[in-house]
Length: 143
Figure 1: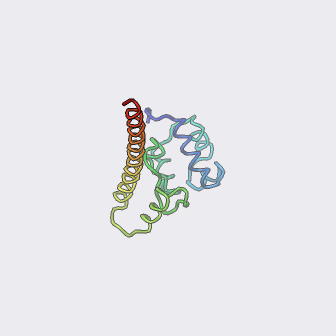
Figure 2: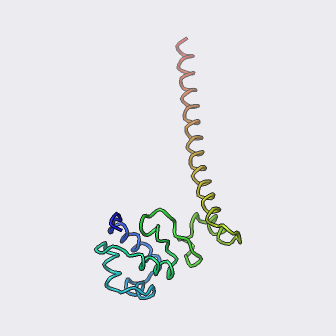
């Protein structure tokens, strides 16, 4: 755990807790964690342990890798609308009864990234077309 940034872990825990509208004390108690220890972890003063990560996962559906590294969107049926991944698409995925929702969620995320990339390419093509038109008009004026 020495490679983890305690401050970043604390910030992710604070953000997750604030979404529940619980105080630090109530959040810790609900997860079965010592209140003072949790407060120090949230402030970045202490490293988070695997035991605490498991308790947070059990109580609030927080994925340990998300808490540690910020790389996984928390996913759980316990989450509020804002916390569910990918907005409406995420809500529909969670409603599906498929054996491997993680793969489906990954595909939705990849499709979203492709859509953003495609939009960027469309904007680039549009700009190039405008520039081409401008250059053609300038060249026709030179003749």
